[in-house]
Image (tube, rainbow, N blue to C red; front, side):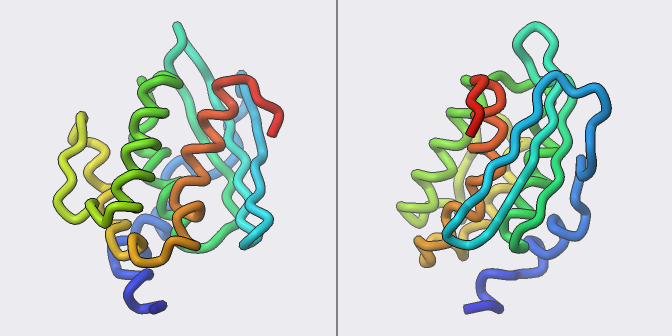
Length: 145
């Protein structure tokens, strides 16, 4: 199971950790914790005209969550709460339906999410992949947790 979940592409994204660290002077900051596995992510966001203009994260989590946060750090600039919700919902649905292998995303920049195809057969790990998205969306909505 470990070899299947932690493929080279996932490990590479986790190691790259794009947008990792504290964003100075952030407009929004939110920490979300997954009590089932211990993953914790803090997101820092700057907004301009309702769109993400700056994003960073501090992620203390498994490799799946780290890789997802890195992809989000690479792709979230210019996105709105609504557009991120669509990506999150699509990601979750495709995990549930085992449909990420050949998924065509509305914007090709999100195609990196297809690396999470192996997670489809491990329902208990879906939140590891979606937690960074949930954190950013909650921050944009003004949720406090």
